[in-house]
Length: 446
Ligand code: HEM
Image (tube, rainbow, N blue to C red; front, side, top):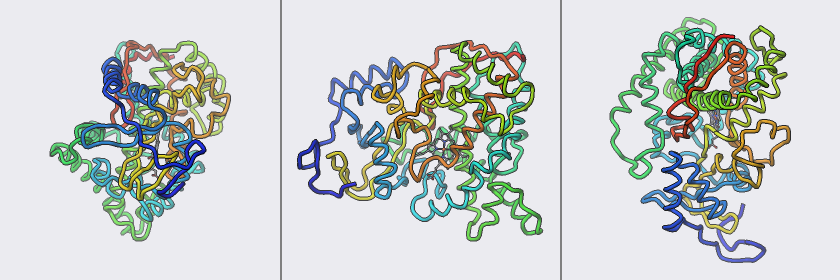
């Protein structure tokens, strides 16, 4: 990283270059692409294609520096990590999660990450596998063969049951209906929207939904505190770690619980629903998956040892994450003036890295738009594949999410044949990248 001042660019010492912005014609073309595809992401690809790996978006009162590509990602996430902050205090996600790990900075972040890491570490995962396939069964057992299901909704239910059971030892099944709508409202509150242009847009109904979620989380915390007061043993889970930690109060526990619920289920919902879509849209690859799962598992439920044999499933998941990365964009705020690649970045500016665009750059991927899981037989260029981010603030749940996706998909493929009823879906930019209007499928038991 270079500090502000003269900088080397293309071998010459020169003053910082101006970051390009899209002109009228290009902006219009991007808008047309967005309207045609129903998503801003292909439009972002067009802008990067025309302007290069860095440009400045030029919206009224919102002018972030947009970057793509392995080199910028490595710089932002690793080399210059200490010059950037995560938290933009006025962003809805920061208002929602307060001191949650995803949005905290500095010592609060590092201390919470150290504290919570053991619950999400690879060594803890074997203990979650049974809860994962049982949650899958509980939802899938409700499916009727002659009915159509939106896999986006079904996968959300499974992912929610799993986060609540594995991390907080809570059976969420009896509460799903009650908290479904407040949860979706809360997700809408932090999704891209008008707030990007008008930070203080009033949104009272979101706060009402959030109060209901908060009350529920505080009920769970109170029950655990009562157990602690009676001298009872805490369950061996993330909530147990937080409750037993010194100096971690209930407000901080609420922030971490809500963070894990949001970051830990909405992303997995995106991954799993896209995987189901691709499974339905590519019958040959689906057959290959079925063969692999049948030969590794037979009729038995998945175990951590057997998951290691599901190599093609692993590549199928990676390829899903490449084409449809649930977290498609990362964002940072410059904590000081600095330069990179000859460009000046001022303190307080927002710099983003596009996981979506990087995953589709012809420089790193042959036929980038093709769904081709076997491309992962070769290792990707470092930082060209970053579905879980990178560096010290990479996804703390990456290993959890990979095991979870393998367990759920293996279990579903083992037990059902799926028919995709509507191939026409577009990428919706909610908190994560979702297939809309949905992944409509029939499931018949094998
Ligand atoms: C397919 C599933 C998932 C994807 C694609 C995903 C993606 C990501 C990405 C890209 C980041 C880094 C964002 C940045 O650079 O700003 C991140 C961070 C994070 N993720 Fe995930 N995630 C997934 C699942 C999970 C799960 C299951 C959990 C928890 C149970 C989780 C919890 C978190 C947290 C707490 C952070 C913030 C870490 C920190 O800043 O130290 N994620 N995730």
